[in-house]
Amino acid sequence: MKKWETLNSKIDYENPYFKVWADKVQVNSHLVDYYVLERNNFSVAISVIGDSFVMVKQYRYAIKRESLEFPMGGCEGDEPYLDCAKRELLEEAGCIAEKLTDLGEVAPTPGHSCQMFRTFLAEDIEEVGHQNRDQLEEDMEIHKVKIVDFPKLVKSGDIVDGPTIAAYAQYQIHISNIKNKI
Image (cartoon, rainbow, N blue to C red; front, top):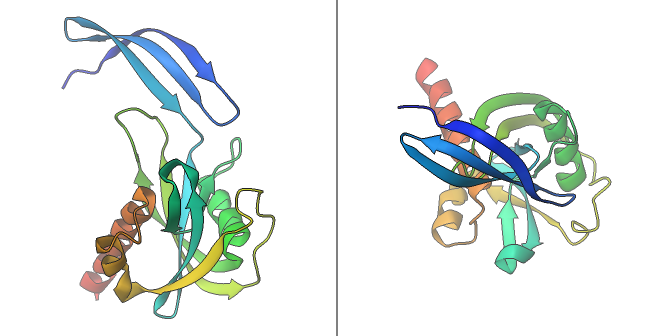
């Protein structure tokens, strides 16, 4: 498959949260206007305590409903994914993990955004209470969800967040690999 050639690129719109790039690209013999959303990369932390995930529920304005999710958030500047995962786990779920395992990287919306995220499995958890939540997270609730109940919550529509569902798939692959090596 031939890589598309970027002929020119300029910022079409910018605010503190994202940029929209307007690119002129050569696709085979066609000139195409293509728009790319640029947002900070982010980390997702899957926290396991016993037989449960530590999850958070918060109101998501864009979908006008509450969303049950793994703790996650944007990397600040050049912050490494691992440091971001540790910070978000503490801020949102009030947990410190003794062990964090990198489960891999995902492009959540590659058709229109260059944003990526990495998933970390957080184990050996100490619950210390949330720290430094921002103003949009003040009403966030911490929930412990039985791992075996996760698929039912996706099926029922209680979990609709794409990164959370993708991270769960990475978790299942990780667990499967561990079981197959035994």
